[in-house]
Length: 118
Length: 165
Image 1 (cartoon, helix red, strand yellow):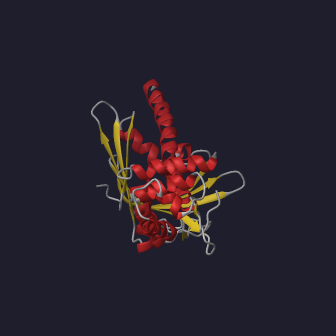
Image 2: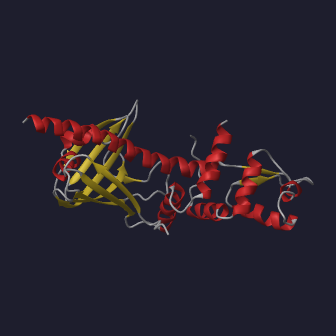
Image 3: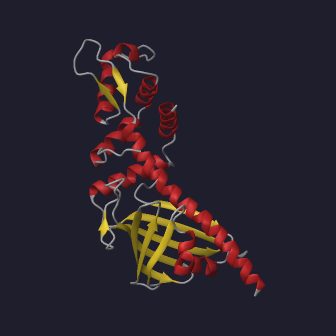
């Protein structure tokens, strides 16, 4: 996986803040299906367009959503890279240890059976 | 609430603490289990408080280096060390994949006999003398990894699955 320079602490804070809200998570899920305008995003929620815009700004700050700078529609697009990167590393770290301990289990079994023979 | 400033890993091994200790601290055994899928070479192992542990992990055409500095060495129940990634000269470096991951990790391990010949291991990681950025990165990652995260993980899984589809 390509790792880009998102890894600043402020970005991580923004990432977790962004993901902490159920509406914003729902917006992300909707954007996983493809880009959408504020109007389209507001429709399934009992929420005004300005309220949706506010959520989008939070998601944009976290780098999870990008929007075209101009044009009347300004559709929002999902950018899952920040989440994917953070998750990839911590998952790898955990897997390293879990897999090492699996090997250790095997080694211990072997050492014990040798000990029994003595 | 999950304490995001430390990460705890617990595991039960089917062997008494004496044997688990031996596997953890004897270089003859360390290279057998530490580092899955790579060839682990223990260059230096000084099994005592104040001793060093210098390790190279060799993959296909690459090497990664790590060091640990033993702080507490009380066989067979307690092992404490500071652990870092290093360059080939054993100088501490940042994690190339995750620059804000804590450079030095305080690792505190206790091995407790279960009474039926097994060992309960409890491993506690805390960032050591970490910068604010490192603490945030560590805390964020821990939070993301599991407990207390719930919904966040679910949506992450769904989104990642969609992106890979």
